[in-house]
Length: 335
Image (cartoon, rainbow, N blue to C red):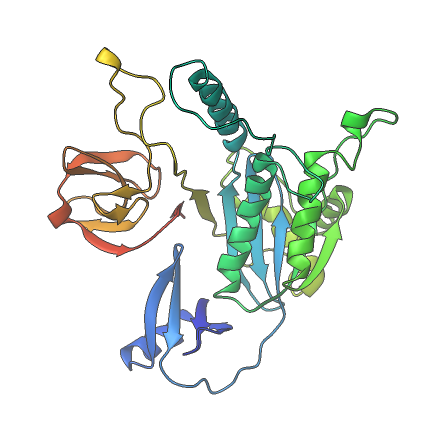
């Protein structure tokens, strides 16, 4: 099933691949890609705008997370994404580097208050905000191509111990983060939560098994997100689509412009930033040799290109004139 957008970029009901090919052949629609998903945009007014109920099932996790977009008739998309787990270590490294600079004879600003913890105005800790913000980013991406009407999520709870403040439910970053996420989802549609034992009972009732032998397989995380979505819209007793789209957010070092540790003679090699020879890092590139890839850093007037599937560096000597820029990108994906 192919996502369909109107001329005004409003998401419509997905269509079959054969009909989408016919529209493209007759120039009734324009094809494009959205984060690894093939879509079409109509060049004419649609014959109907009726929309079925499409629900997004979400299975949170500590390292990997699952999402499923499903209606009563079809399962449109299964997604497994890597959770954002590096922010806490990055904040710690930033703190150590700032403390080190204050002991050197360099100009520095006056110390500010601690902005990395939860404050009275409801600000989230950076690691919590990044982890739950990644889920919200994905929700907004899929909302732009699918007419999602509701969300069902497995409700996770922090361990609590009576009489101990650091184990208090209202103090836990997990509880604070998920409550913020639920509030943001309610602005977009209806939200249904399920306990972990409820998800297991739904999975067992359908005779489905959960396996973590391969974290990017359907049975690892998407089986739970599919069961959650199916519990709301119904229509199936077994999955009709087990193809999985694996996504990983790219990590950009926005303010770090050089190596943290100096090399010989105190020289710090260039590191970080968000641009390479005038183009944004992460941009999709078509190269004559390496085909579709994304843009990394640069050195001595040459570009670094990376694989969309694994993130491995393909080359660090690509010429700018050999690269065709397709557009900005902040994710890498594979099926």
